[in-house]
Image (tube, rainbow, N blue to C red; front, side):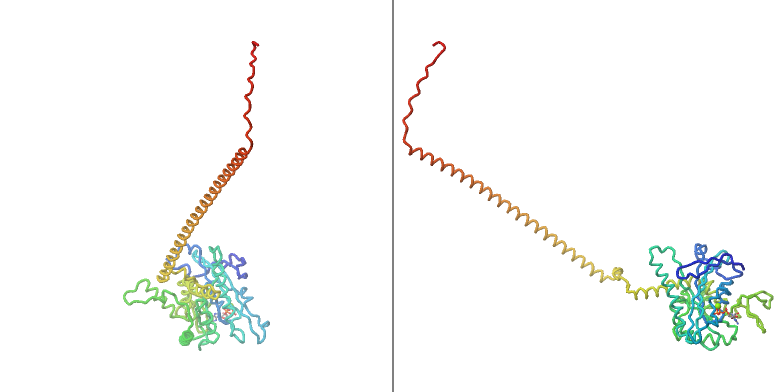
Length: 442
Ligand SMILES: Nc1nc2c(ncn2[C@@H]2O[C@H](COP(=O)(O)OP(=O)(O)OP(=O)(O)O)[C@@H](O)[C@H]2O)c(=O)[nH]1
Ligand SMILES: [Mg+2]
């Protein structure tokens, strides 16, 4: 088990995230994802963001490391996770912290980018009424980052930090759920795929586990808390005649879901089982409990649900249902409502009304145009008439002027003639003496 690369990276709102690439020691199961998954996603690798919540010491760290067969959460990572007893404020509220660890693990050439979020301090205050709040805030802020990224112009690479599954660790009291458990699950069940787990189940007998499970399920149902259920399973009915491949997988899912809340144990230590094989398990004076033995505990069912069978489904439901609901609610609160005019073609009545209005508008426009043309023609005619009237007037004036000039001239002539008449008549002038012709001969 060697760490290959260790590079601190800053990623958006979670600058503390470290990416550590490690090779796995043993089997996890994500290399065997169903065949129908596209080769591209196999090549690109898968992403899974898991949150582990539960009171301190319930084996969260151990179980995560057992699930992925790797020291995903190490003591070093937990240094700032653990709450120092000496610095614990007496009788005061302990703040819940959010701790995020990112690791890329590989199995048979298939990569899984795993992001584990822990919440140290949860349930450790005297008054835990608001213990859920920082956790809900974290889930919401991850939705917000996604929403913000989706609204950007370039949406080609969106880093999905949304929580795909929340493992909730229930203390193995054997009684029933505590008010803290109920309060927490009620706050998160509509925001995440909730997977309840009975922690350290080796501390209870099989009988105690059965009774405990029933009481937990009754509480969950009574409180209307939703836990993760695959969609295929919700919508299909198993027929009695002949079991097809699909029905086989439905039966398998049914078996997995019948184990909720999963009573698990965690251990990364290998011990020898009665058959002499080295297995991961816990050793007791009275015998051993094997992690992966389905008769001993529900660990392998949980791993099947989380990693082998439903990793993609967990992500799809996060995206299509949980995030979509959050997004709709948020946009509604911001006052952004769906524009129904976009969908008017689906309403024939509204469409008819709209067509009628359009037709009426067209008619009104035509009428207005005709009126305008008529008005223009009338005014043109009027102008023409006015022009010819002015013409006539000026011609009339011209002729009048001409006439009055002629009259004036004639009058002057008349006056002259009359003057001549009144003057005495002069004798006619004697004929002018003939000029002697002086020729050149004279
Ligand atoms: N009996 C039993 N003990 C377990 C199991 N898992 C873990 N432990 C032990 O419980 C103790 C606490 O385990 P952790 O995995 O550190 O628990 P945790 O929930 O991460 O604790 P915090 O990080 O402090 O909140 C350790 O001593 C583990 O060995 C289990 O399944 N059964
Ligand atoms: Mg821990």
